[in-house]
Length: 420
Image 1 (tube, helix red, strand yellow):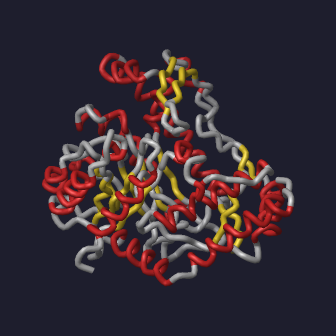
Image 2: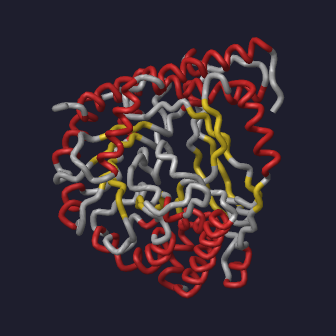
């Protein structure tokens, strides 16, 4: 990473200095304590998080988030800092601002597709959003194709990691605490990967017509993911659970329950960290088939982790009974299509309900904050005393109107803080 001209440096350093000042405010500690309470199933108001904002749609229209650096690499860093600062300044929520800047370890072999070369047709949505339409062309259709999924072979590139850290340290080290970071969360979205390789219709049909093929495919994929977890632990590449990270598809994971009391700070294990899984494509799949073809394998991942999160967009109200068998399950996604009352009724334990208000309210011709408010109040009232977090995500568009984001956060934060 080359260092740009002084004016670019000054821009980035100015943003980092403001971030450090915000990180020093007492409200950051208050937010951390709030996350700890709900993540430990304690009594606390609902916590609020907003993410997956269509920044590309807004960049160039909103000065605060539009980068101006000429150096390409400093421009990328500037963009990251501007987005963090915009959230901290303008979007009322419980995202914690930290003065730590993490430099990820460079780890060869961390291929998220496990060596499978997928084929897909992509349609980009207009306006520079991050949302795309995908049509997956099958590359795994017969039993012999399963061998395309390769077992990972990891190797830590210490030299490149230290070089990256040195550059950031030279640029920002007097303003932010620059630290090297390894993986901290284990998120198994096996079915998201599988349908990219097989096709969606093909995979769902094969569960009925060729169940042995789907089981063999999931077995191979699960083994590959477990192998990666084992190697990360054996090579001492894992880090203390950085609670600021999003956990699964939810909010922050601050907790006093991790790492384990017997942990060795020099040899972090997966049991010292958060894990979780999702099978989003199973929205209309029966509980029995969900358990047989997804949860059976996902449990193997979750049993190795200290606390777990389950779900994303799939409605889980009719599947709470099968989730009761997952190890150390702490948070469950309550998607826009989930029946909250049935989820409470069918739950066999206490969980953090990770509510996902519908982002459609931000994409309509006109913004209706009253309807959005009714949805949040209804979700709180129907949660049956479960600890709650609200996560606004999957925002495909705000129709170029950043004020919708600001207004939604102000409304939601006002509601979750009532009674404090």
